[in-house]
Length: 165
Length: 360
Image (cartoon, rainbow over all chains, first blue to last red; front, side, top):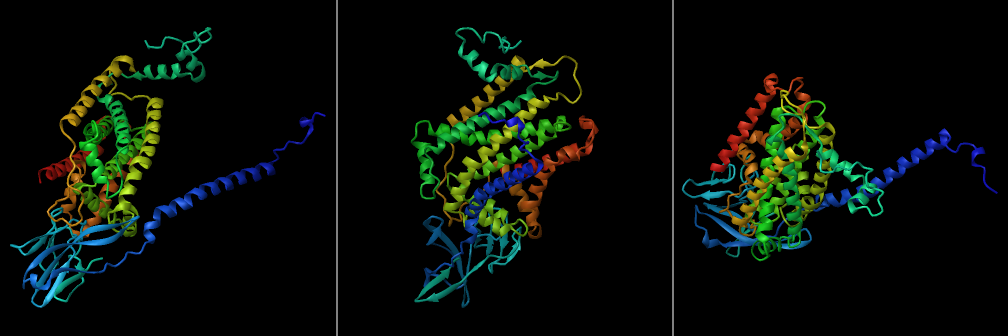
């Protein structure tokens, strides 16, 4: 027997329509969330990684740094670099003032260019935007918001050690 | 007169229709092509209106050369520089493909700026073309994002340090800056994950956004038609084909010819591999970011985020809302003095700072 569709009541009653429209909305919202949530989590993963504090590294013989002298030393650090371990070239300025030993991170606190130590003027100067720091790492002029970042140092076994973040 | 004389229904029902007819019956493409070739150009439309087509062509060149580069390029710190060096020195015509991509990006910036200036001074962003302008500004933003992300990929000293400084600017965004920095870099430092992020954005996210926006822009341009000179010129509108298309072709010949010559004669630079511990290297951004670079030198520490965030943001927002800022009815520059003056001051400022950067 042929069904008599014409005689049946209209399937699209207002209630039925409402329920379907709501369900379409819900399903679509679910679909959007199904891809958006993992995608965003994946994207922001680096925020969850803890920044490891570096190990102490011997960078210079204690005797190699005279009183009042400032030296730029480079060394290699093995660091976690996303999916790989990288050997990163790192550097510090080490200077001895009397009995005090200090080390500065050469990254300018302005936008991260490496500052240069000018011996004649006894100043650290940033080549990018012209920041100037005195021999104590304090800001003298230019756009940097603060002085150079100090790096922890110690002397042990006749060597100068630093711990760079 | 168009090149397609046939009406949509001529010849379609012959026993052996041509391939074009066969396709037309199914797609109606004759009509589409004809409509675009017949597009009316108001009197006074001329060389200034060839820039859009030039941009489109330069984009096609960027797409093709960019795809070709991905055939050899590896986005990893231990191979990126090597793979670019291989492209530059070993691959057949590699330096030309890279040259087209490298110099093409500068061409694009110049041409898009001219295109924006033309639109601005002609006042064609006014009703009903506000959205065409807004989409155009977004495309401009995408272009700058393209050049910023692409700059890192060769992983040489210039690339690395420009990215260290450029991403550090993100940190000065109020409140969420430090978090954003880690997000952009994929970690605390510029490294392996920065490279993959920039690469993915450069070859996936930005091209898709650009294609969508460009399609929207073209749709709006065709829907609303070209507005013509500020004061109505005498004469009837002329069809796009062949007069305007001829001008387009001449401009393309000169510009693309120049680009190819440059790519052929001047091998694109590849500096020493990125090194995070070299003080004898002064980072400098690509020339079109030099204005910002110089501005940052002038600002005292308290105003740091003004230069790195508020001024650039203000300019982008200002451009986006321009059609609603300039409410004058007339498109004539003399009738909208303040907005023209403001733009001239801004352009001069950027120009002087850029020049200062180039000379320093």
